[in-house]
Image 1 (cartoon, helix red, strand yellow):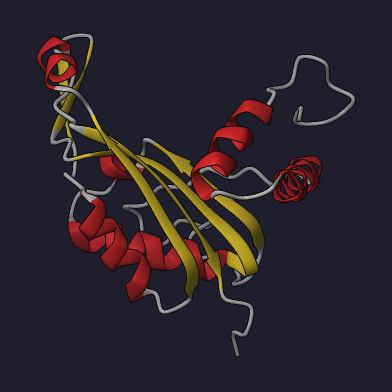
Image 2: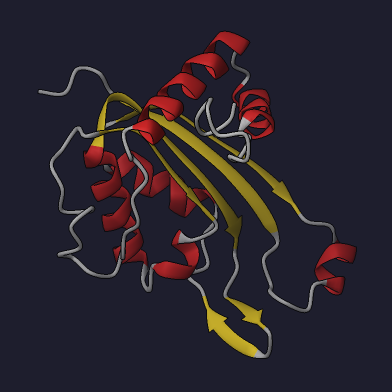
Length: 179
């Protein structure tokens, strides 16, 4: 799936959705539904940036039930300064989802730092339990799935840029019976 059918240089999400569907044990029909929803959102200008540490950031303070899909990849662990900010960010992201909307997160496990060139940045070390607690605490998610994999000892020893020890793909749906 390209971002829009008319743009031949747009990013092709097909392989990404295929891997998520494998983890989610979902059907090709579900992939086609997600692709269609993403394409519609992109055509409407539905990609937004946000600052999770700013409680007044317009996107996170936006109206409820506005987004079909919220996707974050390898950023919340670096952007959220505390577990409280992470939990609040998850709550606010879920609030923005339409009923039946998809929250899709890709994260690393237990990373406390990473380097960009020679500059060291610190991260909030997250694991499956912390993420699952934040998701359940919203009280608005169903079908929560966390697929995690650990890095090998050899990979950890070779990695001089960060100290994560695994990866997680998380997906959940906002309940449809919100009052």
